[in-house]
Length: 340
Image 1: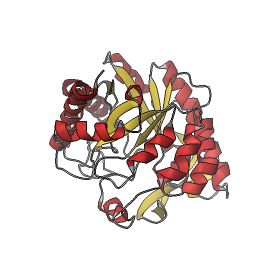
Image 2: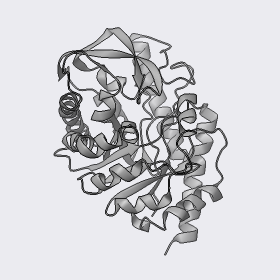
Image 3: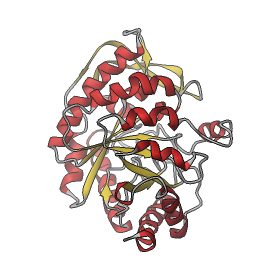
Image 4: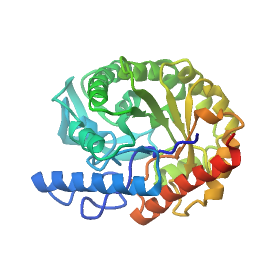
């Protein structure tokens, strides 16, 4: 009851990459960089286990960015001539690669990371991939001329890698779709369909992570414009409830998301965000247990997974470690409070 997991990313050590950035520069090259990525992954595996988490991830230590880490292994994408583009409906600007030809995988994308993770923990492991709609919103299209067609092209590639990750021993494959909270009508229409294409044929657990973004100023400022109730989830949750996706990750603590919206996910496992990634203030176990208690009004005990609101990549490492401990300790307290 109340298993614990992170949404995905964790801070990169200063010896691996720049800290506090979403697109950090690597501190090494070639074989030295590959070794540093592996070392950082093993470090966070150990720290997650020490904190007491139930499901372990790689912390996305080998990826410069949660979307671009996948795109680097896709043919038809020009990384040499990036262009500036508005992301998430122009919430912020970023330099993005361009899709210039039909898309095809160069080969395996995350085999090294997934096999390293599987070899170094006995816990269940989760691996994250960007969702099709979010990828489309993070690249410049110079070839397809149609967002839906390009999303399904990416979905096919994601599916190839997801099936291979399953064969590597991954227990849960999660697709990250923050774009679902921006283009709500499209998400409920073709976004969920593209997501299901990406997950087609998987027999392991499948998940989708839908948040209000990393704890960066552009996202924090955007949240201030959303009013007293954030009801973006209301449009897409019914479509997800009718889908084949097993788990849904959502933002909860310190948000204005009405808790009753979780009831729209009947039949799904719900990864409830009980750790705020937009604040360096470390939650107490009591705060985490209280958030779980509120969610239990709408989510059955056996369906609730305690999670972070989003990734922790831009945070200071010490803060992230403390928040992981709070996550595990709070879930343990919730078991005492609400267990049968």
